[in-house]
Length: 357
Image 1 (cartoon, helix red, strand yellow):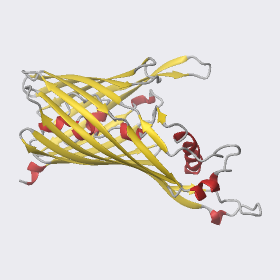
Image 2 (spheres, rainbow, N blue to C red; image 1 turned 30 degrees about the horizontal axis):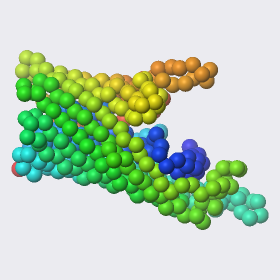
Image 3 (tube, rainbow, N blue to C red; image 1 turned 135 degrees about the vertical axis):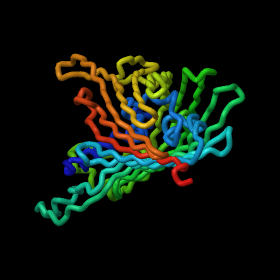
Image 4 (cartoon, rainbow, N blue to C red; image 1 turned 90 degrees about the vertical axis):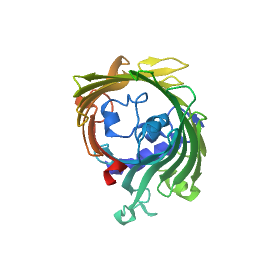
């Protein structure tokens, strides 16, 4: 399958840069982090409150009581693509907190067959080389409480680095804004996360010599040098959640998100102005030690071969254990292969600094 990756990347070069403003750009930054959140279908914008809040809603960093760090790993596309995340966050004082995180999504050791045939028309397997493609997202987060009781805000500054072997690379910069509100009795929580609020701007550098090598790989395609800039449009997530304590030892958390894109997509609710994809998540806890999670999201209207529409969705489940400052979580996404997305096994670990005190 890796032999086809180069062909896909060549097509990617022709389509990714072909438009300055695109519906789908820097999509690796939208996959998500933390197996606990993914097990709830990402419906965590309103109640996130740990080191991973730097990704989901930086306002949640204010719930930190000590330093935390987090690690996550996942495989995608039958283990061809590797997705990794590391995050660290800490409170500054009782009114502010900071965090930093790094995401990498990459495919390594891809076969480059553009030089497979020599100048005399002979196939020479010694001319095959390897290259890798990787996307990096570095996020620096800051959160602060507002004078209104229960209302907090957070901002992210993002640096995007994307590399396609020796063919092309890019730099991008963007900002996110997050808000959380907790009711007086802490029964209800509300959150709003706006990603790429100022749009995220990527500039590409293309090796023209390498481009000429692949210009004729697909007859009639990639004949013109692609554009060297792209803009990621803003997205918004509006969430709310409520937690119940049952007989002291048990808890039930219910959460929902409305994931919005300001363009027409295949989402279940789609207009020319905004498209909305709802997500629902549940977490059942026992004495703050064991957690069972479930969620459903990614509701899409998929066009079939006969042009009819079929509703697809993505159910997820998860399991977590927490003991003395260490939390280990697991999520299985797309349970039962209900959506067009491939299922993935995701593991993450979160460590609270109190463990070392």
